[in-house]
Image 1 (cartoon, helix red, strand yellow):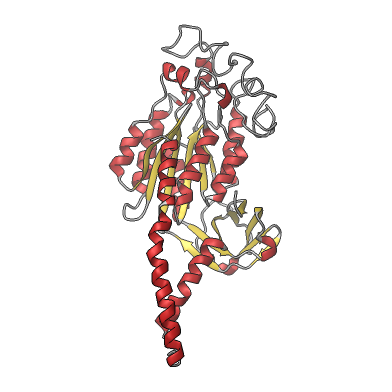
Image 2 (cartoon, helix red, strand yellow):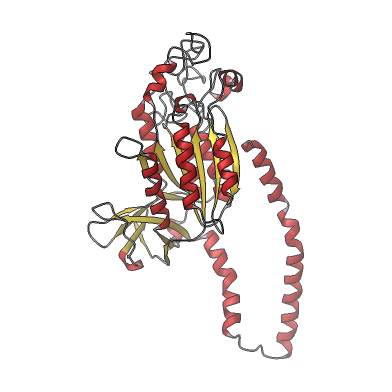
Length: 416
């Protein structure tokens, strides 16, 4: 399923909800009228404890939905071990430099979890997909509680596709993982032919768009704990949205982003002379992809008018250049991909990992699973002065020494 179809379906569900609420409003009006008449005839009885709780529940629900900012935090000691014994008074929380009162606190171990697995299936990942597929299934099989947790699988290259919507079914998730594969050269040469979308013939890696859509269309609709896990080399090519916009979508959806940098530098060297099975020795039009340029001067810099992402964000890519980024003029940059993956994780409260000889993808998944099972949930109500629309910087620390708190960098209030 493509996200365009999903968005239409979700919108249809949304607009149908007010009709279903009409009978409820009528019932409430009748109930209110009856209580008014009864109040004129005799003094109302004192509510018992159960009635008081029922009267308080609607206000609490609205307050949580509208005013309360929830922050998930992981705490580690000097040795890198997770600390799970802290209490509310052990934490300090500031918003825009102003101390906040922590009104809600809990240790999170087994509350419902929504997971989104985003897998890069561009050409640069073709030799890594088997390892990613196997490790991902093992992680989901061990992590998900089928009675309350759900997960989805998304792949991205020159297009973004929802291979499996949210489900607790392990067989369905396994079937979705089996569908992970790199596109054929013919698919890429016909799949992204609109220069206005920042992508010429030859494919792409729409990492930023995938994060934006998964956050905006999937996790934002869910309650409770939410996390995205991204498997990629971190190099975007052809996204419509910028990296800051993708991060904002995750922050607005209260979604942690865990990034796993899994890069194969040899893949780029091999593709410089032509994709195996494609045009013999010729590569892509314009001198090969990636590492060379697209016809017309390449992207960024030669794709959009003015040299870069629409709006004048700059043609140098993000970070350092504004928006829209990509492999740029010099081809693949492992350093830039790493910076992108680090920012996605750090600014949303997740964590960055890099597959290496010292840390396998299986080891990384075990660490992520341990974190998701051992978190603290902190909730506060911003003061009126701190509740203005826009971005608000968060700082979470502990009163105990030698402990490090991992939490999101900030939150957005108000409409987008």
